[in-house]
Length: 349
Image (cartoon, rainbow, N blue to C red; front, side):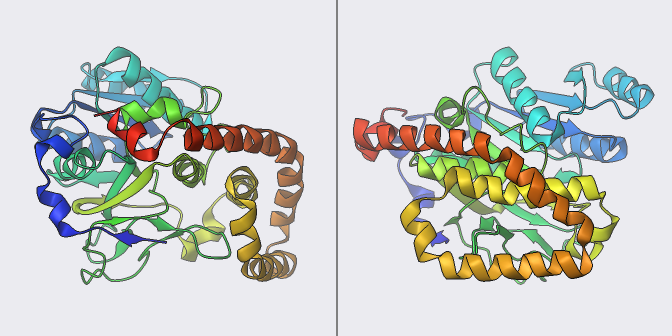
């Protein structure tokens, strides 16, 4: 599902903005990067952040310690940044730590941009994305147009959930002809470049976790966005905010990815459905879901048998996913009945 927004939204009055009559260029934002051995990518990402027309108030990096020597060199080269080294907690754990650190040590911030190190941003990426969110109080998460390094091929124009439930990056691997150059509400934003509204974080976090750390890696971004929409928030795609994403995992090169990593993606697909899907929506889409799962299982049996273990891993994780589902349903009901959506979001202006 995507919903096009009237372009007149670009010229709404200051009174309609989430920050009252504040000028967007005075908004404070921070950037957080999770790095797992990608030091050359990290340097290019940091250089693109340094070129932003609206500079970040603070930048935090969580490093998983793949190369302690290069980590120390990066920290010495950038003493102004908030560097932290620690164990590999997956993307979810690392992202939670950079968000928490920025919210704690760089406050007050209005927005936090979570990035993969293999992303380079155009100079006006942050200001374009913040302008898009700032005038729409119900938007909690936003992303821009991500291109592949040739700048001709799309990487992601936001994420949609097809009827079979498997999230898809819009336009991925397709030539960019401007077909996604419209501001839209989408189902989810890629964690490669995801802007978060700080005042929404308390709503979105579940038992202190913004990204579900049991996922470790993959689908933690779509899981968060699904939960945000359950709670009445919106996800924005702003095509004027452009970045380049190398993307190590591509469908054509899936066999180059470690099987343990691919299993995370496989099992997390089921966990996010159990956590977030509503009964009515699930029943309406059941034929597509069943057909997809039959094909998926058949493919694993015939051509990718090591992935069958992911079914076992997903089954073992189901009790915890169902427990979190109950928490999400309870909070969604409370948000829906405590006040009208209009009252809730205008209280944040």
